[in-house]
Length: 264
Length: 361
Ligand SMILES: Cc1ncc(C[n+]2csc(CCOP(=O)(O)OP(=O)(O)O)c2C)c(N)n1
Ligand code: SF4
Ligand SMILES: [Mg+2]
Image (tube, rainbow over all chains, first blue to last red; front, side, top):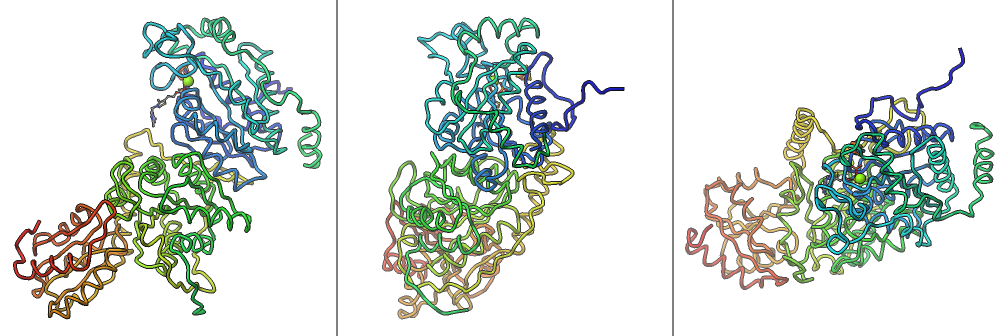
C-alpha cells in the first residue's frame, strides 16, 4: 500500500499540548518537515522561548536549548558563533520577541546573526491567559485591555517584520499565515528559504507566522481562523519584507550540490 | 614551570588567563572598572579565531554565555556591580540548567549607580544567590595579579568539573594594579567531556536538551535536591583559604582580596606593638571557610574576631555564623569607594585588644 502521509521524523512524536484550533502545532510540523527535507535535522539546534511553546524542545527532534523570556536570540547567538556550519533557530511568541525580548531580536538582526527566528504572532500573551501583547490590534479586547486596546492609552501595535527589515543586517524576512492549504504551503516554503539563507550566511532571517489563539480570543477554532483573516491581515499584510531578490532556486541547487545530492 | 615574570595590569591578566585556559568565547558590555578585560579580548580573541561579541546589554551578554555553554564551549563574561545585577537572571538559568561558565565581577561601590571606586559590597549578591531560586555559585576572591591569573584558570576547571558558574570577585584596585605575573608554560586544563551539550545530534540517537524547566513539582524537587548534594560536596572539598599566624593570635582578622593586603601590613605594625594578630583570608567566598573559622574560634588563645571589609558589613554575617557565639565578632569597614587606612584598622585592633567584648556584633 502506498504511504500517502507520514509523521515527520523532524518531530519526536510526543503529542502536542496545544489547545484545539491553535496553529502552533502546524508551525511545528512544518519546521520538522523542512528540517528533514533539507537533511539538516542532525545539525540543527533549536532555542525554545517562554510562552505556550516553552517546551517546543520536547517536540523538535533536533538538539535544543531552552532560553529565558525574550532572550532566545542572544542564546542563539552564543550557540551559532560556535557552530558556524550548523543551523540554529529560535521559536518565539510575540510577547517574548516583541516585548521583553525586543532588544535581543533587534540587535541579533542588526548584527546579522546567521540564525533564524520563527516568530509566532497571535496578538496576545497566550500562556499567561490572554494579556495585551505589543502586537494586539487596536480595539482588541484582552485581559489587560478589557475595554479594547485604545491607541491614546495603550499605544499602537508593532509590525515586527516591517521594523526589522529596515536593518541592514537582516537578509530574509517574510510574513505568512496558516489559514488554508495554499498559505500553509507558502509558510513551509518560507521556512525552507530562511534555512537556505542562513546556510548561505546572508544574515539574519525571520519568518513571522500569524497564528491563532482561540482560547484567549474567546472563539471557536473556525471563528478564530476567520477573525485572523478579517482583523489581523489588514494590520499585518503577508509578504516578503526582506530578501525578495534572493535567488532561492540557486541557493537550493548549490546547497544540494555541496551535499553530493544526498537530499535531492 | 618557567619563571619568566611580566608586568601586567590585573584586568588584562584575567583576559590572558581565560585565553590560556582555552576559553574562546567572550561576551560583554562596557562598564568601568573592568573595561580592560573587554579591550584585551576584543583584540586577542579575534586574532586567535575565538568569538568576541559586544552585546547590547549585560542581559544579552549573559544569555550569549548561556548559549555558548549549552553548546559545550568554554565561555566567559566580565562586568562590574550594576552589570552583574542585570546578569542575575541569566546566572539563575545557568545554575538551573547546570552549565559551566565563568563570570568576572570587578566590584564597584553601590547601591544604584553608586561610584566606580573599589568595594566589596557585592558579597551578598555573589554568595547568597542574587538571582531567584535555590542555587550557589563558586565565588573566588584573588588578592594579587598572580592569583588573578591562577584562579581564573582554576575557575574554568571548577566550572567544567561541577557544571556550574564560577565567579571571580575583584575590585578596581586589583583590576587596575600592575604587578609581575609568572605565566605557566602549559595550563593545567582539565578537559571534561560534555556529552550533554546541545550542538547538533550528529548521529546521536536521542536529542540533547538543555533546560531549567521542571513543571512537575516532584521532578523540580528532585532536581533541586541533586543540586544541593552537589553543593554539599563542594562545601566539603573545594574550600580555599590562607591562614596566617592564627596559632597564638589574640585577635583574628578575617579579610579577603584587597582588604587582606591592607590587613597584612597592619599585622606587621601590630606585631611591632607587641600585639598578637592573626588573619584568616577566605579565598573561596563560597564555599566559605566556615569549618576553619569555627576551629580557630575554639582555640583558647583567641579572644576576638575582626572582619574587615569594603562594605557596611556583609561577610561578617558568615563570620558570625562560623564563630557560632564562641567568641565576640567585630566589624570594621569603609565603603563608597574608600579604603580603610592601616591606622584605622590598627586603632580598632587596639580597642578590641583592651576590651574584646566592647562593640562586638
Ligand atoms: C521574566 C519573565 N516575566 C514573565 C514571565 C511570564 N510569562 C510566561 S509566558 C509569557 C507571555 C508569552 O506570550 P507570547 O510570547 O506571546 O507566547 P504565546 O504564549 O502567546 O505563544 C509571560 C509574560 C516569565 N516567564 N518570565
Ligand atoms: S493558549 Fe492560545 S497560543 Fe496557547 S496553546 Fe492555547 S490556543 Fe495556543
Ligand atoms: Mg503570543
